[in-house]
Length: 84
Image 1 (tube, rainbow, N blue to C red):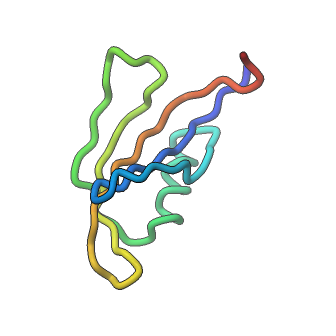
Image 2 (image 1 turned 90 degrees about the vertical axis):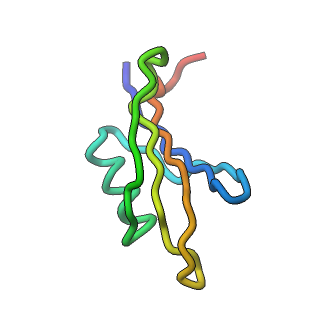
């Protein structure tokens, strides 16, 4: 069965969450993240062993529209397509 990584963002300032992309590998997910945010700084990364679908959660410092830095949390979850 085909699995994809769902790339989710949580803005740590206002707790707004959104899906920013989908990828078929961790490498492709990193490319999507780099393209979406441009220059950014990785602050932390971890994996929760109790969740087998979670690849990792990481916190980034990114630049906003006015070049003000803010922090987001990125979550990569494996999802099996065409399943109920």
